[in-house]
Image (cartoon, rainbow, N blue to C red):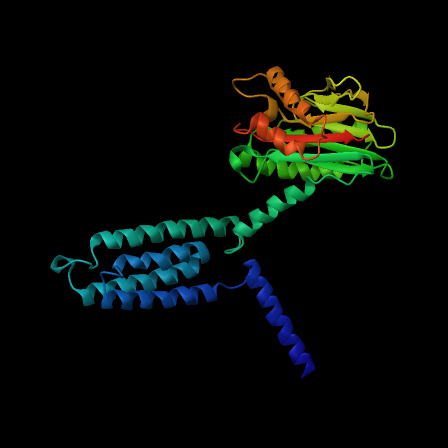
Length: 368
C-alpha cells in the first residue's frame, strides 16, 4: 500500500509539474473551451440580441492561444456544429436581425484560420503551449542576473544602468563582471552588439554567456582576442560588436582598459575636477582575425570616478560623439559634490532619455 501511495503521489506531482510548464496534456483547457461552446449557443438561442452568433469567436481566439493544433481542430468542429444549430433554429438571416449571416460565418472562419496559424507556428518552434511568455520572461531575467556587478570592498562604489531601445525588455548592450585573483581584481566587460532592441537581444544573450565563461578563465590581455575569435566563428551577417574591458586592482586602484572599437572611458580626477578620456587601441570584434588590443593604464585615487558607456548614450544621428561626451560630463559634474550614488540612471534620463537606441552606463567610484 505504501508503495502504491508513493507511486500515485509521484505520478500526480510529475503531471502537475508538466502541466505547469506546458509539457503536459491540454485536455483541461480543451474541455473548458468545449463547454463554453454550448453555453454560448444556448445564450444565442435564448437572446440573440445580447449574445450574438459572432460570440463563438471568443473560445476560438482563446483556443488559438492555449491549444495545440490537433486539439484546436476539435474545438473548431464543435464551433461549426454550433453555428449550424444556431442557423437552423434561428431561421434564415433574411427574416430578421441577430441571426447567423454570411458575415458571421466569415468572421468566425477568419479567427479560426489565424488561430490555427499561431498554434502551428508555436508547435513548429517547439514553444510549450502555455510556456512561451514564461520562456521570454526567464530569458530576460537571466540577462539581468548576468549583468549584476559583484560586491566591492569598503571604499568602492559601483552601479550600472541599462535602457533598451524603444522601452523593450531585450537589449544589445550587456555587462559581464567577476572578481578574480582571489577577489583582489575586478574585471568588467561592457559590450555593444550591432543592432538594437529585440534584433540584437538574442545575439547579446548568446555572447553574454560566452563572455561570462571566458572572463576570469583567461589572462586579461587574452580576453578580447578570444572574444574576437568566438565572434568570427559565428559567421553572422551582422556579427560585429564593440567592447571595453576594465581590469581594476581594488587594493591599489591601478587599472588597465582594453578597448575593441568602443567609445572611450571617462575618468574624473578629484584633484583637478576635470574629466579625462581613457582610450585603448583595438578594432571592432568580429571584423578580422589576429587583431591586437593595446590597453591604456590609469590610477583611481580616492574621490576619482571612472565612467564607461555605450555609443547610444552619446551619439545620435543629429549629434556627434564629441558633443555627446561634453553633454554627459556636464550633467555628471552636478553629482561631484553630493556623490554618484544613484547617478547612473539619472544620467541616462538627462542625456539620452528619448534616444531610439540601447544605452548603458557604468560607474566605478573610489570613495574618500
